[in-house]
Image (cartoon, rainbow over all chains, first blue to last red; front, side, top):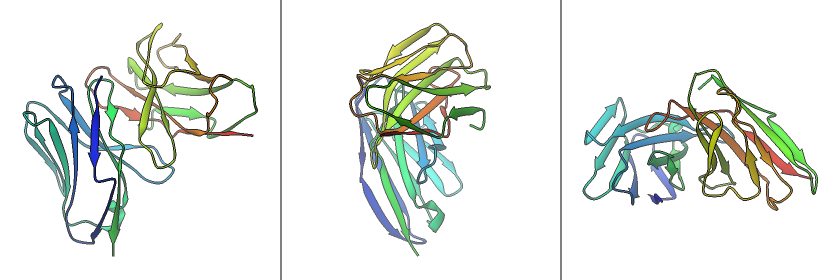
Length: 108
Length: 112
């Protein structure tokens, strides 16, 4: 089955700086890669996704890049704000195998 | 994702008791999923169903059972065989395959 590894497990950045979270996957047939944001005690919410026919996708301060050859994809958050503090999960494959999550803390 | 509901929000289970978690969606989605989330951990797939009257085991199906008699509903039963059921349970649905999953608000199960 699919194996998804996510790094780092925790990340602290100064407000206004950029944050990058990386995921690798094992199944070369995977072609859909969403990113979810989960606030404490809440449900995961989709923030951005990418399909394998593109290498990059951007939505305001959030971007995702995909390298299918190397089988990794990354989430980039620019100009971070306190409300970006949350746990972020990547996922891959049809049944959506999730990474173990990254706890992002924005330091005011 | 407001079209997916889960109940109850909190559930307490006694030793040896089976409990059932409800998940309903009005999004006309074919596929539904159950995940378990332990504190500080990621989401692990318990069961999924891609169509009515059919479902498949996920990575941690032991001690759980499901049914999919209606398109809108995908209840999860936590049986007495599940020795460590305390967790946050999330239901999700999508149109199938490689489509975006939408999550319900979750049920927090605690053992008395």
